[in-house]
Image (cartoon, rainbow, N blue to C red):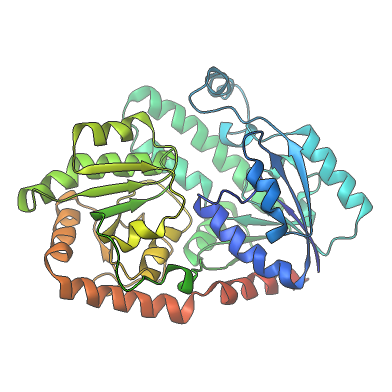
Length: 396
């Protein structure tokens, strides 16, 4: 096949779940197919262009400046979002230059399939009916949860406005696309229900088992570890909830419990946690996340907001470290609470599950082994990519 793949960014440095999912599948698709990749060329990310040959035949970088979330330009976009019909998280990626590039490519080349990776590049695709929408989340559900957990009235009102606009826009794009590929059956069913989409299929999340296999010995780094981009609001909210509600309960039983928060661009409020608590370590961007998994006893995923599926859970399982997660944190994954993961939504219950694992090495080992067996037999990236490939080949 000749594929046209449209995304908002290059895939290196690879520090977000959506990038990992796309990269692992595209590397395998690229071995068998011709992949043309269109994305924005952010001025400070030269590595992306330098390494794109790992997963595509030819790349078409489109210049674009994305306002930093701490900048006045971003504040202006938020204010403009009060008037625009598009959600701010989508309008930030609207580009006449990208639209023109895609139009020219489709006119000049004969593509067997066109993939819109995530919702955000969708405004730049001239003919959505000709493309497959690869939707890693149900974006409207994320915004709905932002409303539910908003810390103030003004934030609740703004999030509500954005949630309604996302609901309308996401539904419009899902119905217009040739087909939608979700990352879980739960997301696929949500799209069917919310948006009356009929051509929607699910391709599960995968994991690279060999890459995450732990070495014989690892340097101890923390009791509990959270892995994730720390400039993403759901991750910030989850860690704040954990630090405020669950960690004090853990410390009553284990006063020396240490926590590592490993992920790029930690916000000021996340960095403040480490300044006020010497047993909390905020790493910022790390060159390799694996030592933080191997060097910790338990992986925590205390999310209250989010969508799609969390690659961090399958990665922890592949690294043979047990996981304690909220229901939202493990949403859409094939799991069995109490056997290959602990699910807890109440702060006391979450704390108790962490304590139980920290105090019982046998329980940690048994849960980690059950989790590894599950991902090893069902969720290799090769199996996942083959299913995605079959859907692209399906012309029905």
